[in-house]
Length: 203
Image (cartoon, rainbow, N blue to C red):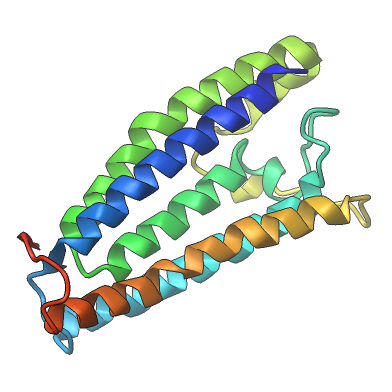
């Protein structure tokens, strides 16, 4: 069962490298759209709604998976309608962060990075789980979509057992999605006072 922890560490490393790159870009750029413009405000509020949805979606998913992913094929709740609901929720939150930045360029960068990297991660995870659970997981692959939820497949038990530590860890991880918005405001203030270099004006 070493493959999944190894993948997890690799994913964390690549994610942190990408976050550093995005932060550097954000520090030296600002959006073409000015504060107060209707489109900028719309992007902000839609982005905030998506971050909320993605964050709480991840927390809800953690209640069902509860650390059981490597021990059994979980096919309940969010995992009954899509095979990777945690990643789907992360993508939703990431789109929200891109919108909060006020820069379509940053939004496209975030989306592009996710869509180019995470399908490879998922393919490796699925190969590992297929090897581990055989026919049960092969049936799951056939019957449940990988990325686009099919809510007609929803199945919900009356009760489930879960691990509080896993939910707590997910809460801590998900809280990170709320950090970019105040950071964007702080960067804007620093740019306004010429305390940061401004190299790029991005759409």
